[in-house]
Structure formats: structure tokens, C-alpha cells
Image (cartoon, rainbow, N blue to C red):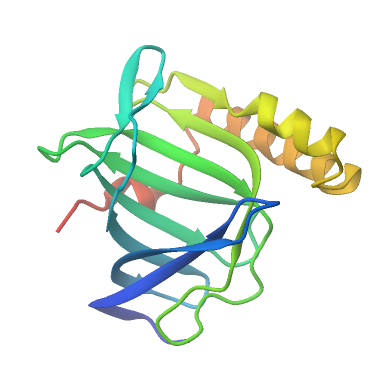
Length: 174
């Protein structure tokens, strides 16, 4: 795929087992062979807090980076005034391709998440849900081992100031 820059509508198809997939609308900002950049408004029923700080709320903005062949995606989060709040990283099953027309393939969440504040402090999220998904065999031991390993790898990269990737750090909202 040649690089494409646009603001075309796109839908992120996202599934957190055992539930079905949900569609999240956004604008395709950039598409390359290995990465999509999608800007979307966050729609939530209740705020998401980390370390007592609101990181996500209804009407906040996210710029998502979806990668081919990676065990993670990254969201760069902003409040309603476009103040940057930090990065939200989902551990996901790797995608083999990035687009079906104006939709992503289904992105399968593996429960573990990593929040990174601008000062580089970071927090692992949803560990209890992850343990329950493994216990009930919603995700296999093999996939769970890989998910934990990937999370630890990302934490080490954050601590060495090598994550998230530069293209994620550089982008700003439209």
C-alpha cells in the first residue's frame, strides 16, 4: 500500500472477548503498509481514571495508531480542550492487514493495557480482567504468555524513552 493521507471516514472494528465486535467511527489521517492513523472522538458512559486523574471521558479525543503485525496499538489521548493527557496502549492480537474498504479488520483486545502519562510514569490496567479471561479460557495460556511478554517489553521501552514510536509522538489533532 502506498502512503495515503486523508480525512476520510473510517471505522475501527474492535472486539474484547467474549463479546462481539463494536464499530468506532473516526477519520483516517494516514495509511501506510504498516500503520493506520485514525482520529476519533471518545464516547464513554463514565470517566476512566488512572492514579486519580481523568484520562478519558465522553467527548475527549484519541488519535489511534494501528499497526500491522504488532501486539499493540497506541492511542494518544486529549481532553475536550485538546490538552494532551498521555498514551493508552492496548495489547492486541497482531493484524495481518490493515483495511477492508473503510474499516479495519477486527482488532482483538487481549485485556492488558498500559497508560503512559506525559512525565513517563506508567500504569498497567485491567490486570484483573486479564486474569479472569485466562482463568475462564477466553484467551489461551499461549496467547496470555505472549500478551504479558509484550506488555513487559513495552514497559522496558517506556523506561528507556524508546516508546511510543516517534510518529506517534509527533502527531497533533486536526
